[in-house]
Length: 69
Image (cartoon, rainbow, N blue to C red; front, top):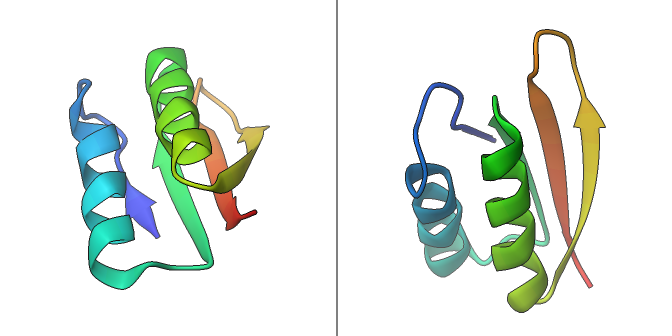
């Protein structure tokens, strides 16, 4: 699980990129706290063979679940 809350772009995407490169996970959960990060992480994930489901939590926090397609 990657907690990228409080990080400005492009840091959430870079953290996801590092995890994908290092561990090549089938599933990865990412926490972010702004819509720009949701969009950017989703774009990166889709371009790297993952499907993304987004769950909006409270206080503009989002949980993204990346699943290898």
